[in-house]
Image 1: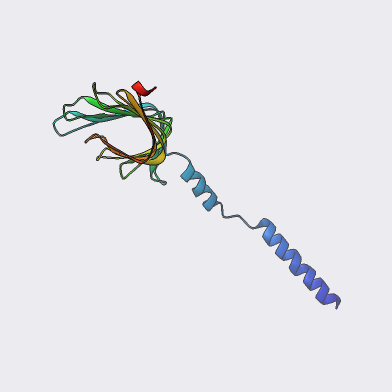
Image 2: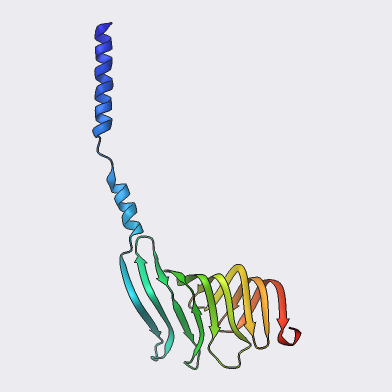
Length: 184
């Protein structure tokens, strides 16, 4: 009986020592940490895109950019995106606190999102919301969040929007209120 007890204690001690000193697989933790670290960081950046004739099509500027290659996206702080029309004049400008740009030319703008019309005498002056998804090169916008649209002599409140900045079409998913200035 004593031999079995001594053998059992030795086995338990050996197992405990093995588990205590077993090297942990730190490769998984290291890879996870590397995925969460940006591959590069840039401050005060501007990117300009030109068409085949050399005319400016759009520009993006931001206070800070972080690129994550393994995760497949680029994150911006305080981005400003400017879209130019067929006359090569700035027509729309989108800004927010943060944005995430995905490789398939989709940008998600977050926190204090504002789209401003840069052309004179447009029906819509600006649009504000909390988050907005922009699809390029189609220049389409969409979301399902509360939206405020300010225009020439009116404002509209609603939830959800689908818009095409090129054709200047805007569709509210759910209309809540329209107020004309002469009604205030």
